[in-house]
Image (cartoon, rainbow, N blue to C red; front, side):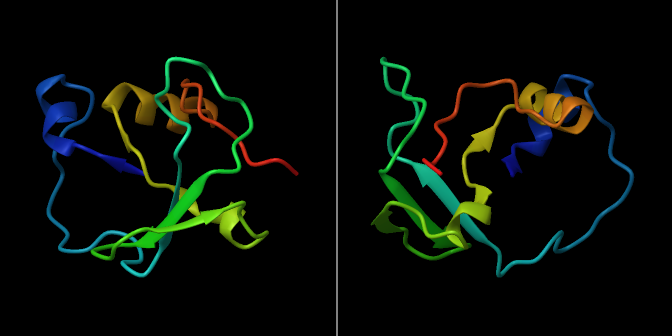
Length: 99
């Protein structure tokens, strides 16, 4: 999950408590549906891209079972992050991969 931290601070949704050079594993893999953000709401997508931090994305089409476990690589709004922390759901419509 990625978020613009400064915006959350400006909105008083969280407060700074210190500094950490690296949070999480910088080798994590991310995924993104190429069907996200279209006018038409797509519930199931077979158009996916995967990547690691500071690397170019690779179009893979359908995700493998391992790739389905990757984090969604969209930059979320601070409100969506709070929703995920409180409810386990981002509160947005994001395509899923067919089972």
